Amino acid sequence: MSPEILAKLREQYGRAILEGSTERAAEVIDQGLAAGVIPSKLYLDVLMPVQIEIGARWHRGEVTIPQEHIATQITLRQMARLRSMLKTRLKLGLKAVVSSVEGDQHFIGGQAVSDFLMVDGWEVDFLGADIPTDHMVMYVKAREAQLVCVSVALTSLVPTAQKLIAELKKLKSPPKIIVGGSAFVANPSIASTIGADAYTSDPQEAVTVARQLCGILNTENALAVYLRKLGHSVHEYRKLRGMSQQMLATTSDLDRAYISAVEHGKQNISIGAISKLAKALDLSIEELLIGADY
Ligand code: B12
Image 1 (cartoon, rainbow, N blue to C red):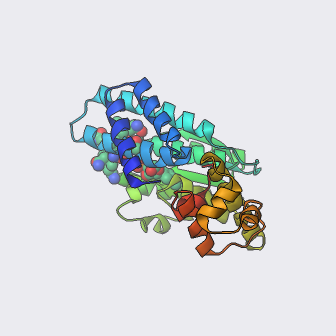
Image 2: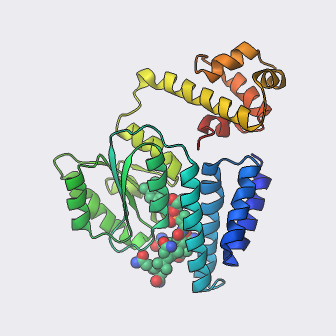
């Protein structure tokens, strides 16, 4: 997907939500979908950066409080809408609790992480903003959650997050803990010094990290899983582009039977062939690997 298309969508979406137009914002997202931008990309590369930018302008006094609040409400609706378009994976049978740290009112990052974990098959409890540390610990204990994701926007609340992590680690079955949020952006290494198992700024990457931490993908079946996932992605994108296997074979200079084997996850494909397929489907390698479901 070309960076220009995404930049244009961001510009139009930002204008729509600042005008407070729910309809126009939905139209911009529809345009993105019609142009072949996958829902997860619209979520992460349009909604999130626009929200951060509008927030920054509001903090600088360039946008009024009502404007920012309406914009946020519209974005929350579009987040829910895009999430409903993402195919939910099979239930993993694992529980995650997501919240902002005590004293922190910022909740959109936590919402995003919850959405992507849910789509990945986790049973997610999103508690929202400002959860008192002792209540959070009791809740995680009662739910027997395997994973806790903590969002920290304010740097001043990093010590509170450290206290929460220390308390969670004292539980009989301590959960794995991922932290994220703007408090870590300038210095991500703080995350490990406060005892978190991992830090990431990207809600989609949090899903992979969560699986790794909880040992869901073992290396034995990882290759088979990746090949199936890639095959599914090639199939979905080929359909999306209205191409037959033969058309894709011709455009990518690969054999039709080879494409069929790739789509069935049966082909241990080379990076060179992935690159040819991505080019023929008008995608970056990364987009093809992430998959059309996202
Ligand atoms: C909107 C906003 C508010 C709203 C929050 C309501 C809401 N909508 O959530 C309100 C009005 C409550 C608010 C208040 C304050 N805010 Co404020 N706020 C913002 C603002 C402008 C946007 C936050 C936001 O929603 N961003 C959009 C989301 C998508 O971005 P995000 O939160 O960073 O999340 C992304 C990633 O970080 C990641 N992520 C987030 N959490 C997690 C968790 C995990 C586990 C993972 C994997 C990923 C992840 O996922 C998201 C996708 O990219 C930011 C600045 C900004 N541009 O981000 C300041 C900002 C966070 N606020 C700030 C400040 C200082 C305050 C106040 C202290 C202001 C004041 N003087 O009153 C108060 C504190 C209130 C409190 N106790 O929490 C500072 C924090 C500075 C710092 N590092 O300490 C910021 C950075 C602004 C700034 N540049 O100064 N704020």
